[in-house]
Image (tube, rainbow, N blue to C red):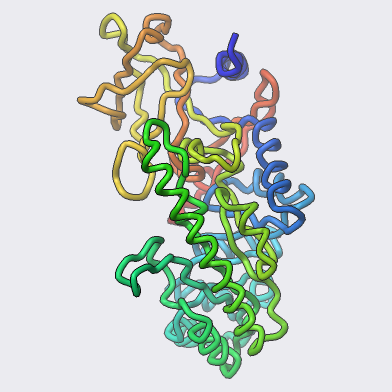
Length: 400
């Protein structure tokens, strides 16, 4: 029996008493992935990206491990909820325009001490001040550096369009603006190199593209390491008490951690290891989060139909954003239909061994987005479900 077949047998036994659709997290794989992130971080703390987990219980589990410290959140409402839930170090990774939550933040000493917000423009400070509604707490802020690689005088850009702050001078200017502004304190710098951390460099069947990605990433790493160090020097000249410099992502943990200027690493997807993280030469994780859909039809030889399954991930639309049928091996989508809203035909010889009511296990393309489809995650240890814990959605929160 192959390892994947053994996993399927375990998951089927563990959930035999449960009807699909359902989602699981294999705790042995989850913990092994967490240990690997810590190993690759080489002694620097890993800040957990909550958007890739979206389950308080699992956030608590990973933060209880040595090597992890703090949360990187994705909305201000989520940040305040997490802080009220007892998480004491929450970095909001994206600028917010949520005036009502900024008023809450500025009025509450506990929240103001626990939450750091992201800015890349003086207009963010103006918005926060206009939203204070009498709240006088000092708001902790972090500056975001644009990590994109610019070539040929800026005519070619590789990387996400995020912050407008690119040069050391630009970040130092905004740091001086924060320093002059009552009610704010600059505590950190963040730089997410998504074109390195979030792009696989070994795509099956595409050797030329994979080589091009590796060459691009090598050039981007060199350029960014030099520029990030210069940025940190420039900002520390203005704010010598800077608490952290955050960088990286699951796909770049070890290379980002090697930079002296970086004090902590951000990662989250590497805990669940969705399908987009299969295409890396630098690490291999274990799929930990899966969802199961039930077989509801057998239309003919070599085909079964499962309920639902049309859970595409965010990003530029394409086949790589679709979940993949994972267990049993040998199933694929009908190219004329793909994964559907309420039913999905699956093709392959493995279909002939499936009966009505059997489970087909899928992997999502991304990590935490799976949790927007399920109210709870069933935690599997060995061949047993030992707990069912709510996702954000299960706790009544759909933050974004």
